Image (cartoon, rainbow, N blue to C red; front, side, top):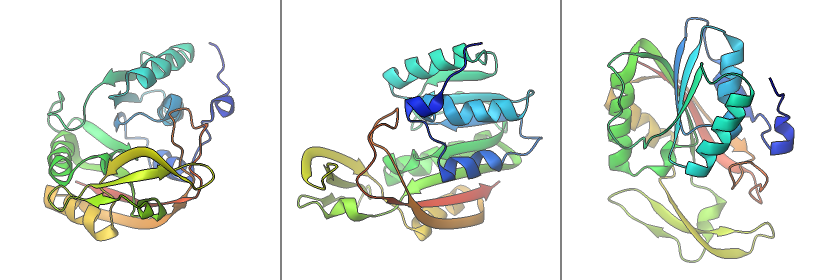
Length: 228
């Protein structure tokens, strides 16, 4: 098995990743990871924690899919980590009550209000009774101070321009549903979940899949654990 030096790929284990993976119990044997982590780093850590564990990790990024699949193959974990091209906003091809744990870090803020509600309904459907979901989403932050920021009250999406490493505005625009503690909690409660804890803090985020291009400032995120 070829050893991978994740640090050379930029895949430094973030505080929220460490906490999310650390929440897994020995009895959490089937894990769903929508929005696979950089290089499959978190998923590989999950697999190494417990030899009985199976993980399904999904993405809509074809390039990231290819890179991650290759790394997982090099680690000899293809039989335990399944990487798939899958859109989290679509009905999920999984049985009711099949997953022990859902790890959804930095993916749900890409969904509109309507998409988020449907996705959380699916999460609830595929999660076992007493199963848990770990979520990290972006909070409204310094980035939305670009001059052409737009807000859609129907979808709750904010469209704004990105700043470069020198804090100069760029022509690149992104659209996200930036949350508050109340907004993400209310969506989860509507889907039927109970909130175990919720916290907010700043974390270094990156703008590319391999984490070689850090955002020029720390970003505010909301982390929570919910149960069925």
